[in-house]
Image (cartoon, rainbow, N blue to C red; front, side, top):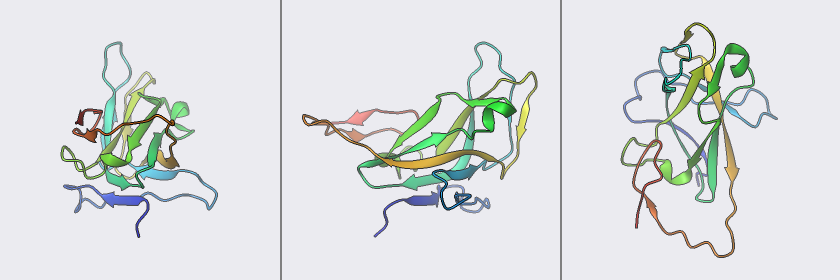
Length: 153
């Protein structure tokens, strides 16, 4: 039985996407690569974060989620995740809107644009369990994709 893992998202099957790997046997995070070349412009007030496609989706158990986290070297290079961390619920996998394709979103705090090349490690994924409170009664069903907590009741 499958518990958690990575797959290539629809539309990215023939683009030589590498599945994430851990660097050492004690690493918590799976290193994720950029799926294509992209430029992260230098920050200016009002600029939106740059979305970097991964070409990946991930699956996990219903009582789990996965975190998109910046690499420790990210801030030294001038880029920081726009949302600090990304929290992705298990029901994001295979969603109707985008198949569960996850992206990293970054701001660049250098005084020049940063070029990210396909295959550059841009972040990491860490799988975790979550807990619920005694009187939890959530029954909604996911109705959207990226950046969505919309539900159908």
